[in-house]
Image (cartoon, rainbow, N blue to C red; front, side):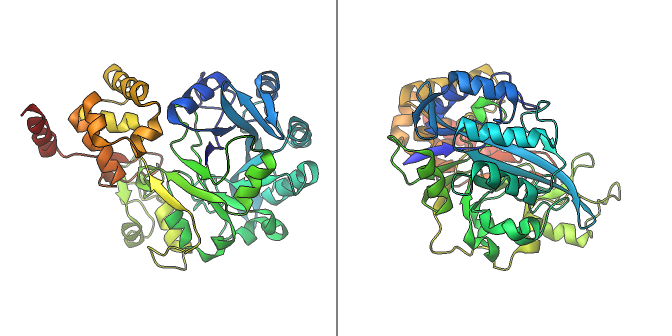
Length: 411
């Protein structure tokens, strides 16, 4: 099996960490137990040069840096007008080689500025982006994935700028779309409700803007990690050879429910309908989130699961569980120290979250932390849904439970 995360951003993208480089990515991939990363941002000239200089080829289309495998990926932001509506769609593109990536970058540089941002903004219809990619990279070697497909502002099905179907968006090129990315605010089960998506593979990635966010969502490929090639990787995705995916609880994503951040309004889809999509405070249209959009396009009942789909497992990052247990911010020194102690002891974060027995955890860590990890495994958490750019708030314990578990530990 290969744990992979194909969507991340380098230090040359806006709103990213200065440590978003190969050193940072490889360090955190090992801490998380992620085997394979997408490089992100290969269209940016400076990042492309760094990748060429530092990545060592180890098999056809697969590279290595400090023990972590990489393939070339990038994200393009297409902003254009179609059918009297402004469209804003993000697309993830895979490339088999530096030569192919360079050819695509040159083509895109004639259309817009690819130097200003690691994720360039182009005034280009996404179906034309698909055509250019197929012409330069080749149909067999390319993989084109609509990114975080439900988010309101920049996605295929976004309430504010998207389309209602793959066909409407990509037209004659829709057969060339073999996979979609869930995004943090949706999970595979939500996508199962739309029957037109049965023909595509569902993958999950972190969209990390800092290295520590790697693996918050990931795709586990049903492949042998040794000597794997680029063609084997994209073939596995195109043909649905996915073992499983690792998911955020979608409620934790920052566009799961509807609302207005400035007005402190958070609505479920039902409440939004009652208010006719209008904020009761400022009387302006609400930011309609992922759950409402899924309800709008779904042709299946909630809970429908096709028999041929890979499984998926929800995880909450270990730092967040520790922070909940200790009642502190996740960036505090105490939380970071506890995180490092656990990872140093057990080897990596995914192993702690998914496999290490509770009794072993209790030997090393606080009772509340080990109990919190168990609750996340059992999906026994409470989350106030995210909305209008605000991440959801996790609650693993209530106050009485914290006192009770603490007393049990004393005696």
